[in-house]
Length: 108
Image (cartoon, rainbow, N blue to C red; front, side, top):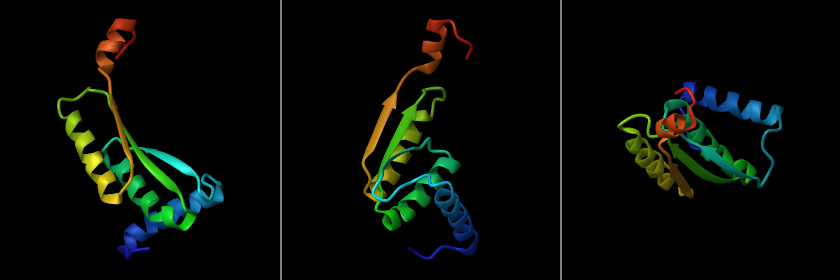
């Protein structure tokens, strides 16, 4: 594993401990990581990308653009770029969720 600053290592170690204690992932498992582009999901992707080698995980990255903000397309590009940095497959889908909720008579 690459060197991490102490605070980042503490976060990494806590997440890994939880994964192992709860048996959330198995060796060689395929994992599709849903990444919004927000801080939490980006950190999760960073942690799983580091941890993947230890468990021989096969990671992929998924992003869903709800089109709820004008800049949401930028999020997809940002997530795609990070997936490329890690050499991970990337899948993105888009839907106008606001229009769909109106069409179905649901609250936004």
